Amino acid sequence: MNHPETLPQGVTPRIFSGIQPSGGLTLGNYLGALKRFVQKQDEGIETVYCLVDMHAITVWQDPAKLRHATREAAAGFIAAGIDPARSILFNQSQVSAHVELAWIFNCVARLGWMSRMTQFKDKAGANSENVSLGLYAYPALMAADILAYRATHVPVGEDQKQHIELTRDIAAKFNNDYGVNFFPLTEPVIEGAATRVMSLRDGTKKMSKSDPSDQSRINLTDDADTIAKKIRKAKTDAEPLPGSLDGLRDRPDARNLVNIYAALADMTPDAVITQYAGAQFGTFKPALADLAVAKLSPITTQMTRLMQDPAEIDRILGEGAARADAIARPIVDQVYDIVGMIRARR
Ligand code: AMP
Ligand code: TRP
Figure (spheres, rainbow, N blue to C red):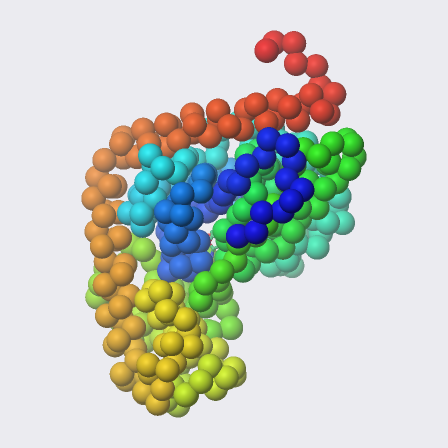
C-alpha cells in the first residue's frame, strides 16, 4: 500500500470497506472482499468494516429478511476471521454521520457523474425512470461511508473501482470548492487472484448474490455436499488445462476455476497452472472441490453457531457502532463548520 505524501493534516492510514446485507454472502464476496479484510486487519492497520443496510434498501428489501441478512453477514465476517476487538464491525444505519455526509455529497456530486456509473446503468436497465432515487444517489452515500472516516484505503472487488474513483472526485471537488485540504484522495486496494470471481454457469458474468440461478454461485451457507456438487457441475470446456496462463485467454470458465483455486490456496494462478498442466477437469474439479470444502466448511459451521445467538451479534454491532460514531461524528461536525452550518447545540 502506498501512502500519498499529501495526506491532509490529522489523517492517518485507515481502511474502510462495506458489504450490502441484501442476501447471503457468496464466494465472490469472500475471496474479493472478506478474506482480504481479514488480511488487512492482521497487518495491524486500523480497519473499519460496515454492513451497509442503507445501501441495501435502494432496492426493495423485506424487513424481516434484511434483519436476518444483516446478522448473517456479521456472523460471516466474524467466522471468516474479523475480530470485533481489533476491527470495528457495525451496520451503517446505526451511525447517522453516513447519511448526514451523504446529503452534503449529494450537493457536491454532479448529475453527469452519477449518470456515468455502470453499476447504476446495469441495475436500472431499461427501467431507469422507475428505480428509486436512492439507487441513483447510491455512490454519494458510498463516498460518505468512506470519507466520514477520512479512510485512506478501501479494499474492494474490481466492480467497485469506478465508485472509488467517484469518491476521489467528490473529495477533490469538496476540498477545492471550500478551499480546504480536508478529505484524502482514497486509494482502492484491488489485489489478489480473485478480484472478479465469475459465475459457475457463465465465465463471462460476475458471481452475484442476485443471480436467479443458485447453481451460479457458492454461498457461505452452503454445506460441503452442495459446494462439491456445484463445482463438479460448473461449466467448463473439454480441453485439459494448458501449460501456461496464456492458454486460458479464451477460456473464461476454466480461467475462473483456476483463479478460485489460486485464491483459496493462497497461490498465484501461475503456480496452479504449473501444478495442474495437462490435467483434465475430471482431476482438477475434485481437487478444487476438496480445497473449497476444506477452506469454507469451518466458516459455515462457525456462522451457524454464531447465528444461534442473535442478541450477541446485535451487541457486537452496537459496540462497533459506538466506536465508529466516535471517529465519524467529529469529522462530520468539522464538515458542517466548513460548509457554514451553525452548530449552536454542541
Ligand atoms: P456487494 O455484495 O455487492 O455488497 O459486494 C461487497 C464486496 O464484495 C465488494 O468489495 C465487491 O467488489 C466484492 N464482490 C462482490 N462480488 C464479487 C465477485 N464476484 N468477485 C469479486 N469480488 C466481489
Ligand atoms: N457499493 C459496494 C458494493 O456493492 C458496497 C459499499 C457501500 C462499499 N459502501 C462502501 C464498499 C464503502 C466499500 C466502501 O459492493
